[in-house]
Amino acid sequence: MVSWPWLVLVVVAAALVVAVETPRLERRFGAEARKKRERERRKQSFRVLTADEESDEFIRSVQHDLESLPTIEERDRKT
Image 1 (cartoon, one colour):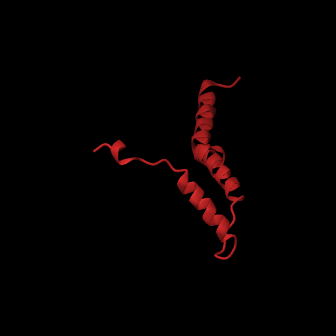
Image 2 (cartoon, helix red, strand yellow):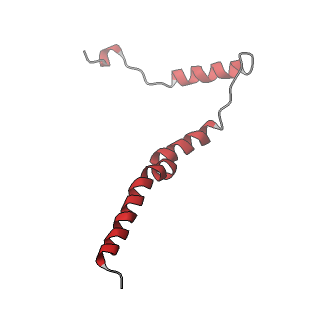
Image 3 (cartoon, rainbow, N blue to C red):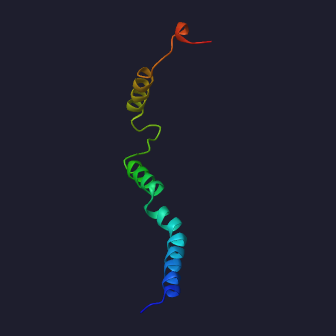
């Protein structure tokens, strides 16, 4: 039969291993890692436009985005 000091030693060793490995596992499987993977997935769909490549489409897109932004009228602004 295992005596209680050995059992305590095993429990302490297991706790130590968990404490030491938690940061490494958190970097790999935690919330920050999930955000990083999602960001990398979104970035894969991006493409770089050159100056002559589809510039009209880009200008129209920017104009549309600017027109759809909410604006504040002068009378609505609190001073």
